[in-house]
Length: 134
Image 1 (cartoon, helix red, strand yellow):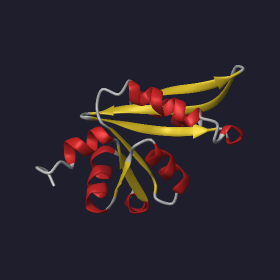
Image 2 (spheres, one colour):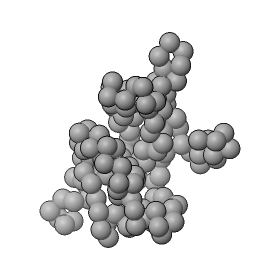
Image 3 (tube, helix red, strand yellow):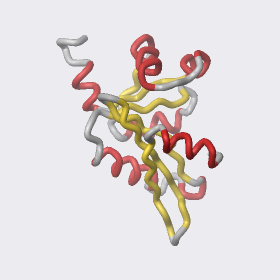
């Protein structure tokens, strides 16, 4: 991410957390408070550190401090990311519900909306997909 984009994201309220190994940044993940949810943003782990628990450690840290339900937007084709989040209890939302959430919480193009999905944590699911709200 270019430094100008990083500054823009920070000014938009994204808080970044990193994981280091011997003084080198090996993973990063951000969270952004958006009204009644937390958006997980910009999750990256250096390739050499994939499948070594770095992403899980960052995600668990962010979830432990999340005061509100967590939503994640990602590319539908990013199957590895979807599997990672599902492994951590997130549920894929698709269709009109996904489109509504993307419009409400993200500023993305119509093309990105078409090719993206939203994943929701169990807190969001229980508050929004309960039998009374189904």
